Length: 131
Image (cartoon, rainbow, N blue to C red):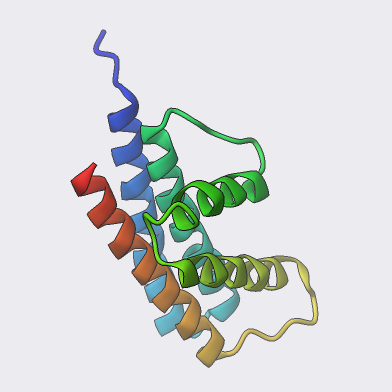
């Protein structure tokens, strides 16, 4: 039996991120804004998980994953400072879209969410290539 390594896990998670981004774009185009916000968030989350897989670290809670990424990689200088704020906003909007019955997701906000996901995936893709 062929057993993978953590680079394989990282690659798999990054492929998940790319797939989630593609889905977010399709949902945005179909004017399914709440669902697009969800997929944009998960695109970022899976991309971040791809980075952490190289370090052989994982967390049970999303907040812990994001906090560690911000502390180690954003504040550590591997990613731009403003990225941490954008990811936090992505998480807030995803939570509202998924759980707030009366939240109305707008096209403008959803476009920003998808743009953030594109930015994260682009930056993470470059990081993974270099590391």
